Length: 353
Image (cartoon, rainbow, N blue to C red):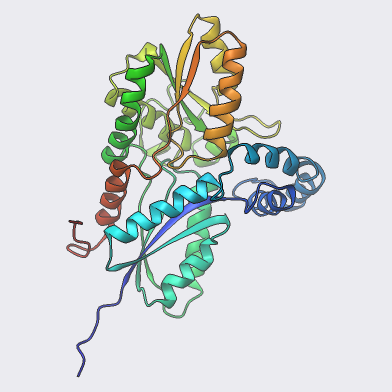
């Protein structure tokens, strides 16, 4: 008789997604799926549909496709290339596990990646939302889809979710190690920690008291129970941790938010206002870190590395240095593996050699 085998454990790496090609039809398909999510544009469905079909999709795909072409590589989208490489690195480190990558929007699809793990016999799956800071529009949307997918199965797998790691020691150390030599080489006078933006109403919806988030100037100065899942508070916590790791004095760094969309109020301060303020103060050399992204993508490479850098030089600035994202740096892979192991039953995931 053959010995009984232990069911494999699964690891599901989750990221937001990317178009399949830098062309308007593929970008339109991606944007339609992304912006149809009620956690992304959280307004009544008929209004969201009208906004999408009548305002956004007639113009935005062409503009975004042009931006994507600037960063596209022979292997494809940088976000997908880095994410697949990260998946492969985790597979190599965890040979006894089944490891898949799923994108919330686009390919490889998150639901299909989850199904592959279930079909492989995984009864326990560690879900890794690759979003350091919690947001309902990213982590929340990802988990909602997976919970629904899991609930639809007769044998529902056990899901162990890696929580937001905005101040995780390994994550902070990995980003700081990446930034430190660049800051030493370029000697910026100021470092901007730039995070993806979100509408202010998302912060308000998370504060049931209505008295804390964006209602007081110090609302993000510390993580407390009322803002424990607040994206903006998580971002400021990440910035404080990185500033501490990099020994940055309070006057040598600031926080800003990029990539806002539409006319509704978005969380401040805005990056496209903060950079001109720094120039007006006489700052000539600035570095920008984007610690809401663990892989380089359109928002880092094109929005910061190209457009913001060109605007900075046009305003008379000497240098704007983009600190790359974590991608597949060894320190980040080690930090990620530690996050996965922290969710496993005792002794279930042995440290890699």
